[in-house]
Length: 205
Ligand SMILES: Cc1cc2nc3c(=O)[nH]c(=O)nc-3n(C[C@H](O)[C@H](O)[C@H](O)COP(=O)(O)O)c2cc1C
Image (cartoon, rainbow, N blue to C red; front, side, top):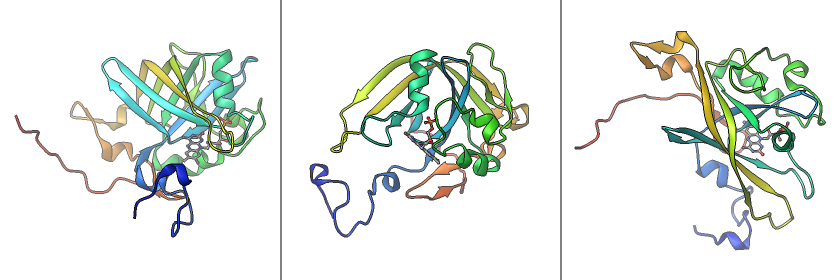
């Protein structure tokens, strides 16, 4: 099938927007920020990825739940333009999902969901203690996407990674071992995935 996106994102026979099921698997960034009062916020974002390795930059996209509404993560960055991306591993899946609840602004999801935190080195928001890796980021740029047909805003946040935490137990023979990281990935709809077969492919020269 083919469809023109200007006609809407649920053409027959599709029952739901297929976009998340096409662009996958996606890593899950567990993003922590601080509000103007210094209260921490934590929420998962799978419209998240690395965009450059050296210098290291990441992006994520905050998609408003409704017209005139905003994600707390996005609002907090106006007050404190720093964030931490804790990479979600399989063992943290249930806690990660709990922090995706639409808590009111000012609720600390670390405390509300029983997620232990640790301080960072170069940014003010805390990181997830159990994460095998965490990226300390400073906002580099915001990109405001056009609103959806029903008026929902989406904001892309590009961050410069200024510090990187890696758990010593995932480093093997001088490399980060994917098998020891055990990443959880986001697939389509409400589906998740874990690592399948891992193999090396040498690039042609
Ligand atoms: C696995 C997963 C991935 C998600 N990815 C995104 C995303 O990329 N962008 C987004 O706006 N919301 C995403 N959400 C929904 C937010 O986590 C949810 O709306 C949360 O309440 C936002 O919290 P905040 O308002 O504290 O920022 C995701 C939820 C889950 C469970």
